[in-house]
Image 1 (cartoon, rainbow, N blue to C red):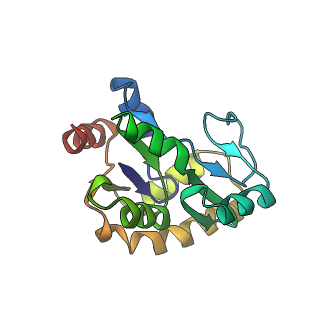
Image 2: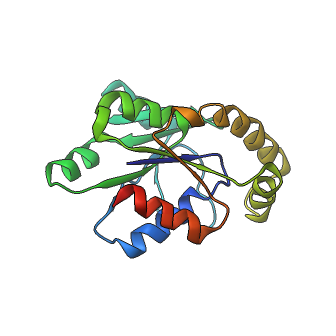
Length: 177
């Protein structure tokens, strides 16, 4: 299953919450070329790759999906997803709208796509600023890109409004289980 949202929409928090309740749910750790943020851990939050190594992986077909977002590459290692699926395990992926579309195209009905929607623009911007990890320039870029991503929300199988984490988590469990 694929969760997407605008930056600051709450998908990472919801993924942590659902995995705490359902530890058998495998999380697909993505690769990225962005710099680590405070608290990031190699192999846990992301696999941090150089631009050259990532582009080599693209050429070799090592990604189920990949995209360039906010001037950095992001991608899902195909080997991990294939191993989980072969073992009958469900996989949850934290992807942008481009990645979700690629996974849906490649996996078809096996991929459930869910868009996490902030309750309104004011709350969304408050969440972005509240993280305290991005510059003003980065926040403005994320808002601009997020508005473009919002235009694709109706392409997803499900939309969850993240008005409260408890409500959003409950809705996510209804969809997944």
